[in-house]
Image 1 (cartoon, rainbow, N blue to C red):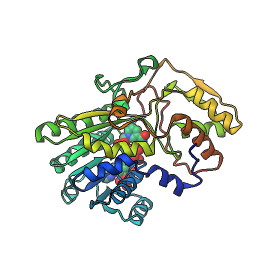
Image 2: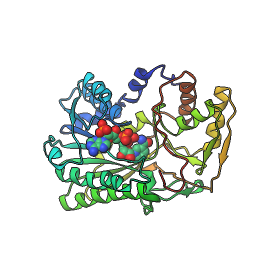
Image 3: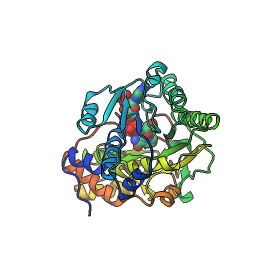
Image 4: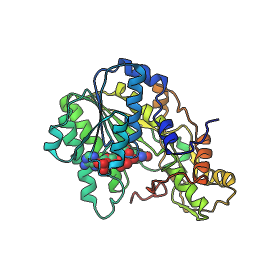
Length: 342
Ligand SMILES: NC(=O)c1ccc[n+]([C@@H]2O[C@H](COP(=O)([O-])OP(=O)(O)OC[C@H]3O[C@@H](n4cnc5c(N)ncnc54)[C@H](OP(=O)(O)O)[C@@H]3O)[C@@H](O)[C@H]2O)c1
């Protein structure tokens, strides 16, 4: 059984723990690594994991963590671990030109929340910014973060969308994410840049994520109201391992990879399980059709193996984290949204 972390330091340590597979991979990967959008929910622990894997592999390699660093806290965390940080607005061509060109790039800057009502900004962030970065890093291999929301909502019986399914994004956020993919695909074609489009569905690190959203409602005796009856999740530590391993799978034309856990979870069942641990009652108001955002990540399991942490363990850890007053980022995933309006 995995112990629930007692504080943020233990949590950060868990989600930045490289797998043996990743440490081996670092020995074969040539070049330095730039992480664009490093000051975000995933980027911080991903940068820490990259650094730890390099040290454990005993190889010479730099990690550049790049973001605007609109909050200093993340920058201090990274620098405290010996990671070089560079403040840069990736929308600004001149600033991007000054960035060191590295063989490996992970692109994770983007915008989701607040799309409704300020669509032009979302499109600029999710489509123009990738173009600026893809031009600058045309000789790199690039893992570009995308989302499972480029697929349509599907019924649980399908087992989830697969990479060969045609994207049919609902709403402007998801459409702009498909735009981001197309821009990377375009540059991959014209410049022969090896690219992997990393279609992630709901990372979970206890401070945020679908389970955190549900657990908070239960703990506060509020109803869980949702349009989507089912969901997929993946532990942030597994997501981070898969991200770095994906540098070995970049290709031109660009390849696609779904990233999530193997379980299709029911909102109602997960809520009841967490309520039982908390000694609370789950109140579910499900307006759902039988369709939800669901990804099938079998391809990633064939490439890298299954996640090291199961959904069952995540459900228990999430309930315990909330009960012990663990930190929350207060950034809801909006997993419950079925009309694409985030
Ligand atoms: N988390 C998930 O479960 C999930 C699920 C599906 C897809 N994704 C995708 O995965 C990517 C990473 O996710 P995340 O949750 O870590 O996102 P996030 O928390 O929004 O982090 C992205 C970071 O990018 C930086 N950034 C934004 N605009 C920038 C700019 N113009 N120049 C430089 N840096 C900029 C921001 O930090 P600064 O303010 O410091 O610049 C921000 O914190 C996103 O593209 C997201 O759409 C995430």
